[in-house]
Length: 334
Image (cartoon, rainbow, N blue to C red):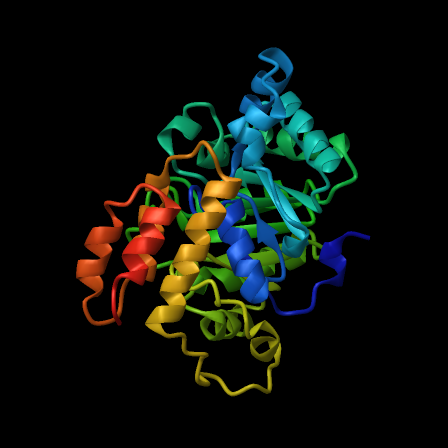
C-alpha cells in the first residue's frame, strides 16, 4: 500500500516546475498549507548517474542532488526524473528510494528541446515502446510507487493510442497536461478531453489514478473540473506563483458541500512581500550555487497588485542577495 491509496478525494497536488518548485519554494508553501502531494523539479536521471557514479561529484557539491533535497513537512513527496534509457531511470529510481522519497514520477511531457534531443520528455509520446520500457524499469528498481506525467499527444491529440500504452504498464497514477506538445501553452487546456481520458482509464486499467493539469486558477476551479470530468485529482502549477497560500484551505475545497465560488482568504501586500523575503532567505540556504536571478520570476509574481508595485518590482529585480532584497522591501512604505 502506497500513500496514493490513502489520499482523500478529490485531491490537489503541486506541479513540478523547473526553477520554481525547488526546495525553498516547496518549504514556503508547506509552511502555509501543504498540497496533498508535492513534486520536485524534474531531474535528469542520466545526469545523476554520470555525476555521482562516473565523475564522483560529492553529493554536497552536486547541484542535481540539491534539486532532490526536501523536508519532512513536504510529505508525501515525489521525485520527478527523466531519461530515455531504462538503466538510467532504474538508477535514479533506486536513488530516490535511498533518499527517502515517497514516490517516483516519470516526465513524459516536457517540451524543452534539450530534453527532447535525448529522446526524453514529450519525445516519448512518439516512442511508446521506449516509454513502456522506462515505466517497467522504474517499477522494477524499487518498491516506490511509479507515476507518469504526460500530455494528450505530440503533434495532435492521440489519447486513444497513447494513454492505453501507459496504462497497460500499470503505473500508480497518470497526470495529463491537457495540451499537445505542439500547442505548448499557446491555447487553453482541453479540459473537455479529461472525461474521455477517464473513460479510457476505466476501460483499460481502472485501478490507475488520473490527475488533470492545465490552466487551473485555484482550488475551486480545480474541484469543479474534477467533478465534471470524473478524474481523481488535479495538479496546480501557475496558480502557485506569488501565492504560497494556494493550498491552505484544501479541506474546505475538498468538501463537495462547500459553496462554489466562496470567498478566498485574502493576503495583504505586506504578507506577500514578507513571504518573498522568507523565500529569498530559504533560497540562499537551500539552493546554492543557483543564481539569485532565478528568483526574478517570483519577484514578478509577489510584487504585484498593489500601489507602486511596479516601482518596487524594478528595484527588487536589481538585488543580488536575500539581504539586499529584504532591505529594499523594508525601506518601501506600503
